[in-house]
Structures are given as C-alpha cells and as structure tokens.
Image (cartoon, rainbow, N blue to C red; front, side, top):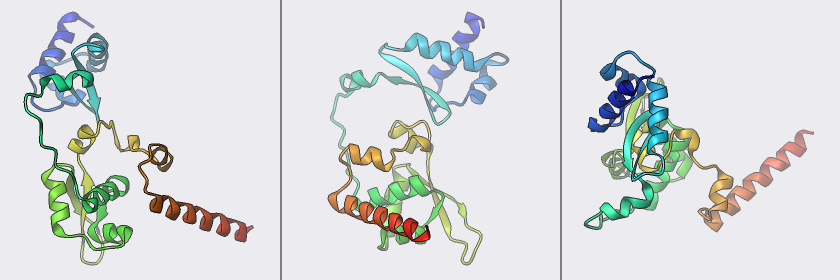
Length: 193
C-alpha cells in the first residue's frame, strides 16, 4: 500500500461531513486496499488528540474522548429522555424491527405518539417499513446515529442483562421480575423432565 493512497483515504475522511463506509471511500480514492489504509490510519492516530473510529461499518474522525471536554465552550443543555421514551428506545434497539403494538405489549402500557416523535427527532429511531399482516403496521428500528451516539459498533454491542445488573442499572423491581421469570423458567424446565 502506497503512502499516497493512505493519504488519499485520510483526506477523504477528513473532508467528509458524514461517516463513510469503505465502499464510499473507495469511490473517492479509486483502486486500492481501503481496509489496510484505514487500519494503518487508525494505528497512526491511536493515542492522539483525534482518532479514526468505525461505528456500524462507517468510519470518521472524532476527538479523543478524554479531550472532548476541552472543546466545549458552552455547556450543552442535555435533554433527558422520559422513562417512557427510554423504555421505548430500549425495546426498539433490542427487538427491531418492532411495531407500535409490540412496543406497547412489551411495556404493558400504551405509548403516546409524542414518545416516538421525540426519538425520531433525536435521529435515533426511524420507520423501517411495514409488517405483512392485518393492518400492515408501521415498523420501527434504530439508526446509525443511535449507534454513533452511544458508541456502539453494531446492535450486537448492546449490553446484556448481566451487564446491566453489574452496572446497577436495573431497578430492584426489574430485578425481582427477572428473578421470578427465571424461577418460572426453571419450574417449567423441571416439569418437562
């Protein structure tokens, strides 16, 4: 791999306003091993003030996480999601594509249209087509922006129940429900034997 090719890949990433796939980069720089160039650049930028990262198959430059606070001149006003929006986002991320009725069945309560609007306005949820079936309900899925915002390479990087429990992110009520579900599962397995 030539230094000129690696420089071309670097320039393409630097000039892009959006994260790019390896295919997008190849369209700009032409023939060459884009994957090797990206790996070399990621190694070159490791530990520096900026780094090249891959999120969901797309590459971009970002400020090193430990230095990001230096670039904020004004404090961003973070808008907290409501519990309903947080639960809805989690259901969509873990079960996508999912319909509104399925979200409501999992949560056990109806969701307001505003909840989905907030998630779509944030760019974390998108319509993902319609299910073949009665009424052809609209399906929802998470977006590339969702992965990028939460630092995930793909949906496979979402934490599991054990990870959430270890981080103390499950409410005691949630844990008791999970434990009772586990107990019910154990009872049904012993009945089958």
